[in-house]
Image 1: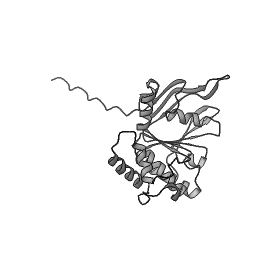
Image 2: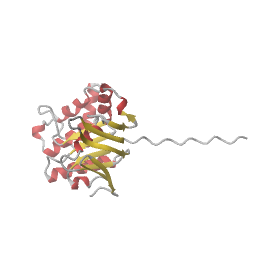
Image 3: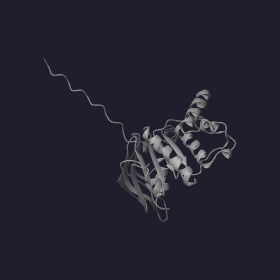
Image 4: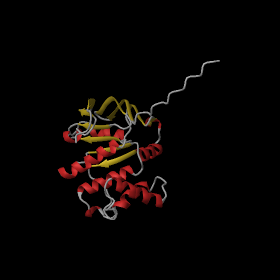
Length: 243
């Protein structure tokens, strides 16, 4: 009898983020190298923080990772997709499906309820209206705001507004939660609540990337990447986020 053919091993999923000598230089004169060519891999389920002072290149890194800017050299792969091969329409669609953004300033519509703010994030993704409402409600319950569905932003605390913004980022079920200074406008108590929520989402399997200048926020990541003068350096691994 012939030997049985060996079973093929399942392939691991591709990294969520993969920079291959990716960099960005703004044209001059003189040209400005905002991000020097760098390599970076962020795997599914990681919690990575990116730290650096003002003007270090954090915003440029964020814009590339979030598909808001394209690198001028090297390659950026998101979920294994080479983003440099995509046209503007496909890049926009990929960003909407795969990346959930959380910003320092919340960016909520002031005259819309929490439920409406979250549901509107799916308006251009082809999700039927009834499903949008149901998924928005689920996302708000997930961030602890099931009792605040009808509240408009002016009736919410800063921490509650940021949790609405996180629910809006989660509602499309993205591969990556990309946060830019998510506690920058919050007092210490609300900041702690938001960081605890990010820890919970990470524990549930979400890939989280946080851009921050705050070392206490950075300590929540399992790995920290530092940027200074446009140079990215991968940092230390940590066993777990602080309690």
